[in-house]
Length: 79
Image (cartoon, helix red, strand yellow):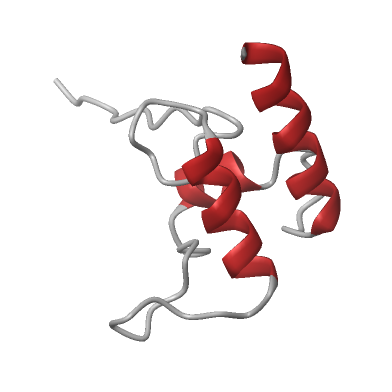
């Protein structure tokens, strides 16, 4: 038989550590600001569907200030 690997996104878990917290907010802010990680990579791997979907919280196909705002709302409701 054939098995399909299903990658599930969790909107808000930008760094994919299983938690939605201030660390995710920092990562998405650095990405939107155009900053790069120490190794030169983007803070959000837009070629990784799960990473992109986790950061594109409003689901409009772009990672922007609206996603940062939505993430901060999610974090405030969780605390």
